[in-house]
Image (cartoon, rainbow, N blue to C red):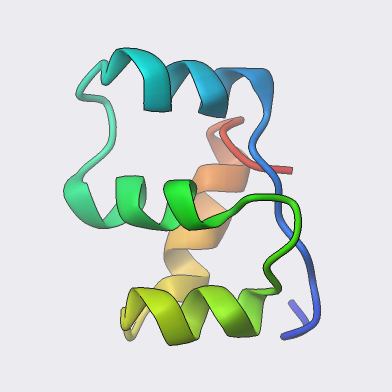
Amino acid sequence: MALDTVYDKTQLGRLEIKNRSGELNPIQRRILILADGRRTAENILKFSRVADYQRILDELVDGGFLE
């Protein structure tokens, strides 16, 4: 993944933010909230302050929360 990749929530991601199903841990949720279709992976890293952000982004993409 390149640091200039832009992530956006899918419909499932938006529903998760709205309904808080509990499927995501707090760090995953924080990164999901930051992925707004404008921020790059580099910006998400900067704002989230999560060392393994790439793994979490991959999990959110694989889970259908981000595209």
